[in-house]
Length: 320
View 1 (tube, rainbow, N blue to C red):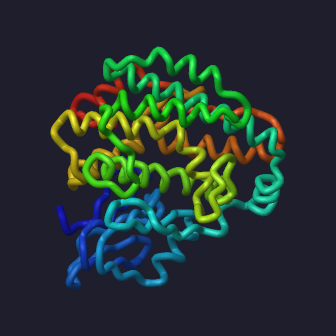
View 2: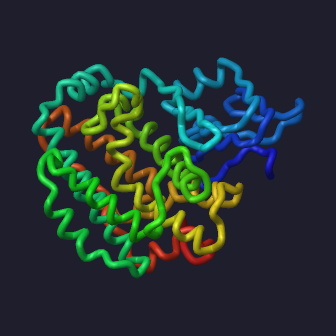
């Protein structure tokens, strides 16, 4: 399967992972096709694609690939050798009311943005605490830290929680490194998938991924995606933790497949259990409505049970 197109999700929304060298990507009669040495390796219906992640050498594309995927609000994420994203083809038209939504997003009042960021940080810290508790680590302080978060998080409680979290999660010698190998590379790959899913949801909701709530680095084209994915990140961490427990500490094809399947992991919501990618899609739509109305709340992910979290990535035990 090493030289074939990856179609990881057995449901409608798929992430296409292009990881083999020397592939040619094209469009043929409503399908994305992938060939090598003039021999077709696989195809996926364009309407089934949720995102394309490319991190191989020597890929060649037809211009039609970019336009047809853009017409469907599908982001194409280009990655470096460490699996970290370095560029993204972002569709400029993703919603029938995009102009009104972009104006509302650009003119959102700061108090509203600070309140939304507070809610996101609160949800992230609670998720981190649940993840730690599921591994048997001490997590009592995380509820207290979450309650300390104020509008805009002026005390940067998020960073305080992160320092405790990584030490407890991966050991005192672990250092988070976006350019690192081994465990860091697995984390990078998992976050890249999340970013692609969130970016598409943002585009489809008629919002712009560069205009963030909190992230505002001038070089970051996905500031809003980085904001909205925060509460979901600990799920990647727990999955990578589980992979390491199983002896997988490198970005192998099997590890990538398991990480991509996280996008269909069921999360509790007001509408019952929903796959992660559906949860993210609703979240982006809620944010667009909040921007336009100037009020309302986001339905952020709640923490799954310790049993469910411990089964992440264990095929046959947990649907991921």
